[in-house]
Length: 456
Image (cartoon, rainbow, N blue to C red):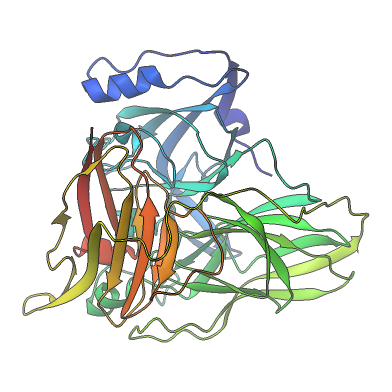
């Protein structure tokens, strides 16, 4: 797997660098409190965001914005109980931040404009927090997201636990798409179709490259960590129709592997799968199967990459029947403590506004530390929306009264049209300002988001 290499140094013991002198009290407290567990490490990383020429395919180069001159940005690797300390410098011409998607971290480190002043051009900011959960996470801006992420500002964060399944290899695959114009350059942003559907492009990318060739040895079983960073595209993932096993989703492993031949990844979703074994010489299409989420433009089955199976190697993969135990927070019949309604309102000026509880950029009521939250998240619209909760992970209890296919920890769940999804989560002792929103970036920007406080 890729590693930060020159961009990271590992320090043992409770090394704590001083926070910036002008940092807020809450930030300084969070910074100072971030200590690694005994025997764990401080992973120190330097990131710089800047513009550069991004070659997505031979003969096709666009102006990209990336971290440390690459797209995706460096894959950060750590273990549960480590502390990540990342010094970020902005060399772009506009302000930005880093949001740590899916991580249970202190509010001042969440990277939204509610808790952090955006990092201005030429300035730096240091994020520091302990990593409490194993899983496949990612980082991206939370300022002008629809443009900054489209231009390439994203990357993976892999946190490993002590009890991980042993496979023959591992690949991190970041799925994205780009909207290009007739000249092969990044198309202009905006327009009514983009406001309604979200921005989707016809250039499908894996790890920053257009429809690349991937490789696996015959006879081997690999762990693939897949992240959908697209601004709006749903990926109904298929690997040539071949069977695979789902090992985990947003925040770590499932209780047991689940056999499948496809899995739906909404924007911002992740999945971990066991892929293989295959026969030498096989060639499989890694595709997004046709999926209509009630958009103006319908998507047919489209290829993201090609998997080539090379000469055989012996396998040492062991996938246990039981991966971990997840204790349910509540049952599907639990009484909701809150209703969150994702809807639309028609506007003479804008055509359509995307709203939460009938208002744009909703200010929701606070929740108290230690009080179980059971939310009915209602989709009143006729199109899919991916619901994302910042800073906390939840369990899906039911969708339209029916239990989900598996018990898991999530931070993103797709809301089917005209549906109610019941989730449960526990606000632990991390007070501060948080948000939830639709992760179709244009819908978030158009008002389909809310902020709330966690209070003691």
